[in-house]
Length: 286
Image (cartoon, rainbow, N blue to C red; front, top):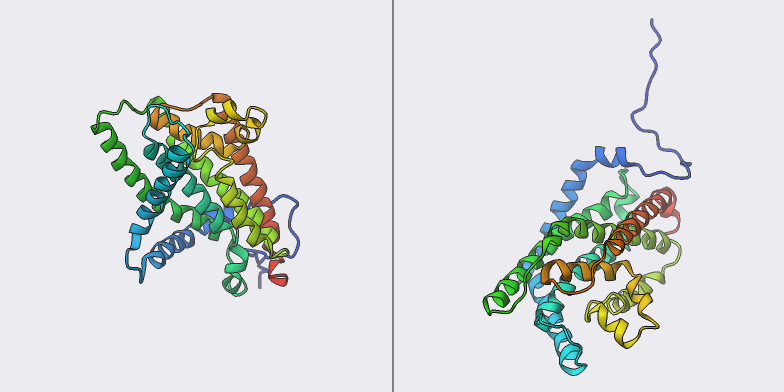
């Protein structure tokens, strides 16, 4: 009888390499990723009265609030762009990042039940959240497009520029930033539960440090000694980039673009490494 060598398809061990990105295994589980995305979309709108309309209402009301407070009361100028459209562009971009970040930052705790029973690459969960949010982002882009067309029809002199070709890259940067930061926070919350409270508070403050309700140029005029805090925030570069390519207003530089792209990739890879290392022993601390 001939000896046959048994080769295992997968080997689960308590120890892993210092740096493990695990891309091949994620690709093997792509069908599960698609299944989770479908589940997320269905469960979000099941047994709701307005369904997807919630994703139309939220940015509209936020844009109205910002317009009343920052433009009408605080008299922050938006140039030739109507304040409501100016705010809606920034809010639409911000919402995708914040939804990716908030949805990812609590991955281990909210999915502890399924993680403790079935093995699959845990990063599938945050990835499915980011892809699901693309559906919501698409709805909000649709609302923005309707408002945009109405403003142009009203003879307001605004138009997109050639930077609109960078739109997919800006979406990718938002996804990588939200995913990377979310995976870092999710890994930390397995040991430090009170970080969940801090995340919500910090995200609310981050809106104002990312130039969402005001132009970046106003910071340089009114608080030049603090403008570096806002300017070197990669989210600020994304918000300004969105406004520049859609409204042809704001500050854009290739240096800022490549800086933001580099930070996005570094944070994503760093978050993925920490996430993959945490998944092996998080069940003992959650």
